[in-house]
Amino acid sequence: MGISKKDVIHFIGIGGVGMSAIARILLKLGYKVSGSDLRESVNTIRLKDLGAKIFYEQISSNLRLAAVVVVSTAIRADNLELQEAYNLNLKVFRRAEMLDFLMRKYEKRIAVTGTHGKTTTSSMLACVFSGEKTAPTYLVGSDLNDYKSNAELGDGPYFIAEADESDGSFLMLDSNIGVITNMEKEHMNYYKTEENLKVHFRKFMAKVLANKGYLVINKDDSRLMALARDFDHQKILFYALEGEAFVSAQDIEAGEDGISYNLKIEGREDIKVNLKVYGNHNVSNSLAAIAVGVREGLDVEKIISRLEKFSGTKRRMQLIGDVNKIKIFDDYAHHPTEISTTLKGLKKSFKGRVICVFQPHRYTRTQNLFAKFVTAFEHADKLILTEIYAADEDRIAKVSGKLLSEEIEKQGRTMVEFVEQKGEISSRLMPQLRSGDIVIFMGAGDIYTVAKDLFLLLKKKFKISS
Image (cartoon, rainbow, N blue to C red; front, side):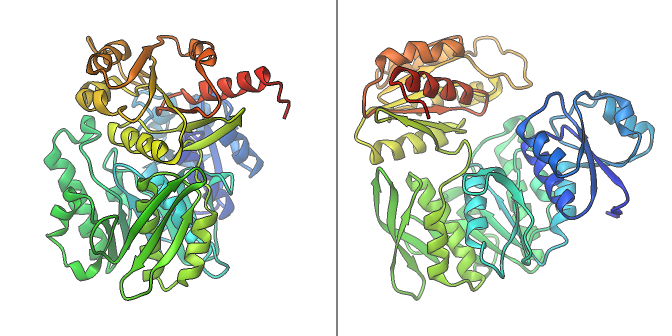
């Protein structure tokens, strides 16, 4: 892919998390960037400050200086700018292709993929390699709380990327270190069958090894272990919460300040690790990051020290606020496994009630995983469900948040309340809250706005000004 720094690279939908991150790295490398989106956002403001030309409407004239166009899978084929790009015979690249263009500039190319945990694991890796000589270039799916950004240009040989498996585009990345957190039946609107999903993950593994690289695989995931049988285990590092592995955890203890464990590294003495994040799933994520760091020859004590400072990422168990000992968290979890794991982690860490506010994401996902959603909230003391966030989907008959709430209620395991309009959730919830409660908002849509509303209402109630 030949792109000159004289060329203008135009992003259609530049405000998106992944698109804005790529644009940020390109700008810091000295490339010229323009882009369009439907509205101003934190991401577009950041890019404008770095020198990007931003348009807040998508029209063909925005491409008058562009030589290259980058488009994500979220952009429809009838988009005016995309049509104009084809009319002008401009180079049009998918987001993953542009990410690969950046990755190929680096000697050590780490791609983190999997159904769950990609963002946290890749963010932990960014922290692990944050030393002076190894400062990585990284591009992940959410802002790191410690750095207020999801992408940064480093001066080391490492490029760390969150590799999106949802549309198969992770196969476009030319990585030589592949981290796979897990594999579950998800994104079936793209994969259609579970066998096709396995084929894609198997291809990802093969591509990494063909680049004379190595894999880091979660041994606790039986599906991944079945795929790993096809490859040379001398080129795979396994990590696990249970059983023997290259790195593993023992004596896991959950508390209000986070989670701790004894780290076992093959051939070394045990080391105590104290994380600021919650849940066994984050222990697992940290093990993946540790495995790569150890394999790359980093000092183990420095790896642990950096991980212990890691405070998470935006919308991944993010603490919005603590008012009168009522903690409000926001989380991106939208799959039953993620929901159940996160709630279980909270229940282990805190003594108070765990109240979950969930906004289902996509009609197809709700339909395909309906039975699993019904049992996903068992670790919540109370559940408030609102209507499905459609994203770009049309409604599906007999699939709704209300029907899901009714089915959960039939199980009798969790107190459930359906609030159709999400704007009414805070006022309904306020009178029910008491000191010690943990309130977690979950979903990949816009439920995070309600978390912020509730926080402001609580501050007003208890007359907290800051």
